[in-house]
Length: 91
Image (cartoon, rainbow, N blue to C red; front, side, top):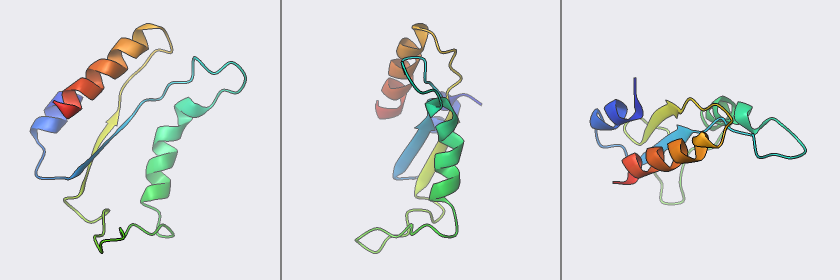
């Protein structure tokens, strides 16, 4: 499902997350492209504290809309795709 379709199904979440699995510009170490699912796993791990300083459990249903990962190709075109995706989210 596209990011735009997921945004249109939004039901009041206050936080939107999206993964950009991209590491083509890393001149030394590769690996950031593998981070998005690992970040999700860490955030929603039972060992994580998902409560904010204001007493809100941000991991409770209705707070986070996970838009998934944007399929990227590790080419220069990815920068346009990233900009377009962010534009769709914030506008």
